[in-house]
Image 1 (cartoon, rainbow, N blue to C red):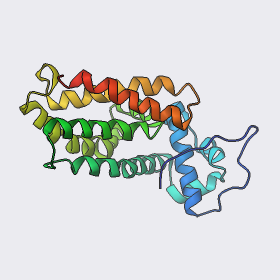
Image 2 (spheres, helix red, strand yellow):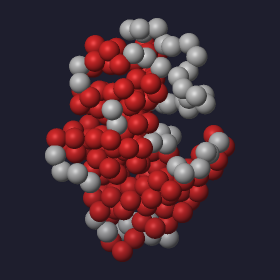
Image 3 (cartoon, rainbow, N blue to C red):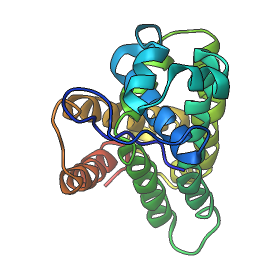
Image 4 (cartoon, rainbow, N blue to C red):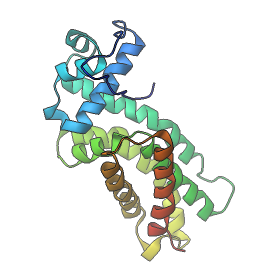
Length: 216
């Protein structure tokens, strides 16, 4: 079930609320929560605002999730689940046919594309990873560490083959890639991008970021 959020019509809630207790209601709540957390941060987003964005009664959020922190964790778990397919596709490149350079480029392409596919993700991660504490620890365990475990074997192969620019470490290289895609995605969120625009941005990031970390 993807985390997604559709804009509300002018003047309030969507027409036709999701039926209480249905998967559609849960999806709407998670999407509205991610939208709110990525715009205003955890502290600045209230359950009533999330409920209004999802078109549900606030009591339903309390019933299904128990607390705002539990809802926040459910959002992170949903993000991790959605990113899981891309992570597994990267893991499939370990020891696969093809040259090291081809597999490393494909792995980084899948890494970048997966993050572009969730528009709110960069802002959400940037906010939470900047604040030490329980939420930062949870995101590192659920989202960053699994992705790091998938990418590092490829980047270590690249390092051994002299493919990393300036002989950089695999760990630092992956952080540099993450940083290089985060700011453009943050800035572009100011605009209402079409699906075609989002796809073009993803391709542009791949074409521009890979030469920053891989030797020619």
